[in-house]
Length: 313
Image (cartoon, rainbow, N blue to C red; front, top):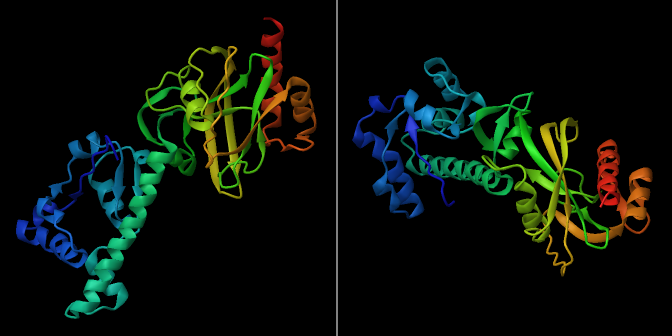
């Protein structure tokens, strides 16, 4: 990943000789046919190291508890995996340390498990992005984490929504993909997502429109529709979604409208009249198009503001 630096350290690294530190990575490299282990180095965990880290991963709960007793750090910036130390893994698996083949297989299984966790972390960073964490009053707390973590941890963050109105007063309406986590296969009269760390909220809808719908809104008129505090719990996902929603009206100038939706999020895109949208918001469904996502009160309020601004033009 571009711009991402990963380092490994140990709580008791200073108690292990340099030769012993190299034994395990050398063995893993041999088993996997790798050579990069020759650049391996191990650093002692320190308070400064934890303070400077953007994200902290503990390999298992015991290590997390040990670190908690020794250091101070922001718990929201951490995740704990379920990777046992080799001696513990040997004991749990009833593998005899002198059985080299069994030990090698155990090491490979452990490596594969680490790889699975690392892949999930990569997806969290790449797909959901890094966002600023805020308190219940929308004040920045001074650190950033993957958007996916905020839902798992029930943390407040900032998000944006935009309603796109074309020059001939059609509203860009999307049908969400079947695979998306929230509101799959439902209609949405807005687009949006998390506001990136350090990003100006007014710039976020421009980026999201390009990423989600492939629509360039560089010359569009963007009107602030206010901020709403949202706190939802999704029982089926066992997730909290807590965010301050910055809403905008995006009025496109007369132009050739090129739409290339991100298929992982958006299945189809429609241009729908205000009359049809009014029916959709009132009855929560529209014949031949589908059902509206469940934020009924929000869409009723936001579309009232959109109509007010359009009539005033």
